[in-house]
Image 1 (cartoon, rainbow, N blue to C red):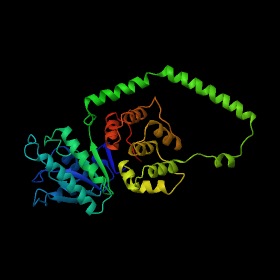
Image 2 (image 1 turned 90 degrees about the vertical axis):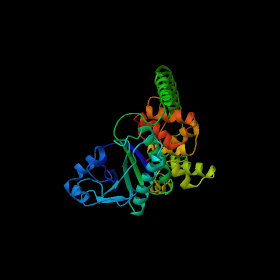
Image 3 (image 1 turned 90 degrees about the horizontal axis):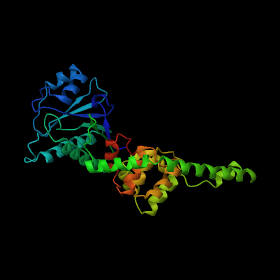
Image 4 (image 1 turned 60 degrees about the vertical axis):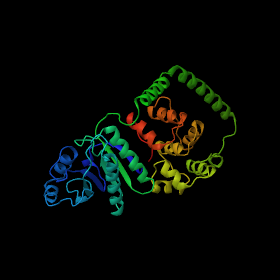
Length: 325
């Protein structure tokens, strides 16, 4: 997917670029900068000792050395001063400069820590909203994979009210075992009746079964796009799906997607719950009332939350897999 939230050590990522926030004089900093320089090794420290910023907007580029990344972008980030000195605008520009620099250098992937949220004292809620909105806007118009790397388990994305609403919805649905058991017994009895009936009917050949096969996932997806008079690029970008993956889907009538990919398209197409279930069924999946991922998807669709990145925020806060490939 073009944009992904992850909880991981940024120095362990195998990407083209990682971004490192540094002091204006390039002295060894704390937090991410200290970790990056320590893991990258003495060669990086030696090179940095000979570099300098000519302008605050400069991005200094070095090899990754001992890291898995090919390059490191070293950049200055603003200090939080209560929001009265345009520091939020400045932080947006830092993300934009790094993203544009990566595209100009024809890099395919870049990873950011949560800039300015450490000793520069940006409130994490503000820092994360700036990062999310800036990256989301950028990936809609550029083919690059962007990671936003977080280090702790704290919930920063969704309001306390939404967190409680989703928790209550999940709890309520998970507390319905008796109803689910009754439904299961009815379904099993119905299935046994069908099997008994079929045992007395003519056995169809495989060719006959395949001839009456329903729409594949690809067929249904493309039909839904056409029926809504949408263009492909609008849909796969709204779904946070990589253009190359969408091309594979379009060119393979029997493409087998992952469940998060199907759900991403359902959200991007603004499908209702029944339409979502039909799309999932075409790929061999269903929504389960016993899986938290499925219940969160159901909650978002029932409440017409059709922005993939907002759904990501809920999934991330509940530590579920994100939508996409």
